[in-house]
Amino acid sequence: MKKYILLALILLSNIIHAQNDDIKHTIETFFEGFHHRDTVLLKQVCADKMILQSITESSSGNSLSEEPLQFFYRSIASMPKTLKYNEKILSFTTQVDGSMAHAWTPYEFYLEGKLSHSGVNSFVLFKEKDQWKIVYIIDTRRK
Image: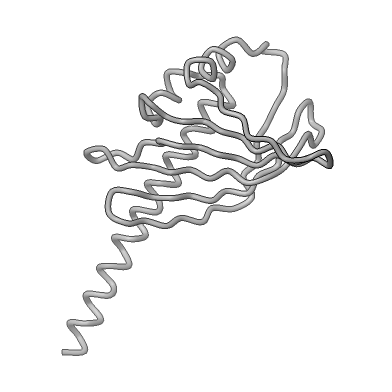
C-alpha cells in the first residue's frame, strides 16, 4: 500500500512540475516577445481579450491604469530600435487549479542600462486546449 501511495505522489509531483514549467515557459515567451518587440510572438501566448493594468505607487498616492490590448501591441511594435530596455524577472511563484494558473513575478525594469522602477507582475493564465494563455496582467511600479 505504501508503495502505491509513494508512486502516486511521485507521479503527481511530476505533473505539477511539468505544468509549472509550461506556465514559466509561457511567461518567458511573453518577455522574449516584449524585449524583441515581436508582437507575433506576444500574440501566441496572450489571450485575444487579455486585460493589462498597472498600479503606480508614489508619495502622492497610488493610481490604477488600464492599457487597451491593441494599444499595447502598437506601442511595443513602434518602440525605437535604439531604445534599450530590459525587464529582469527576479523569481517565479506559481499556483495552479485545473485550467487556471497564477504567476507572481517580482521584477526590476532597466531603461538604457539604469534601474527605472521595480515591482511585481501578477499573471493569470487559462489553459486553452494544451497551451497556457495569459488572460490578465497587473503590475505594481515603484521608483
